[in-house]
Length: 49
Image 1 (cartoon, one colour):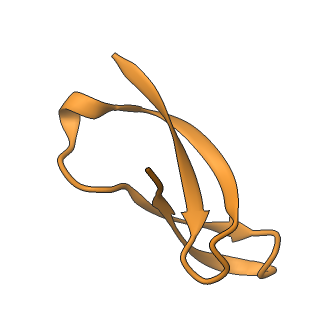
Image 2: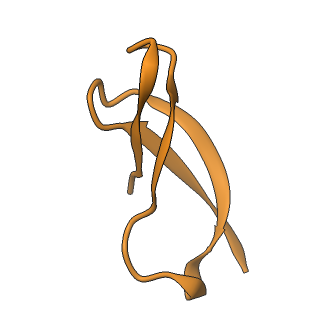
């Protein structure tokens, strides 16, 4: 079952992205390097609660 999660920038804590994910397939939080519009740079975005 897919669940929608929100990704937040590690530097400015701006919640920029949302993505579907499979909760059964992973144990820890998702981390993806994406472009942050607030920081104007590619930063690591981490899954929020």
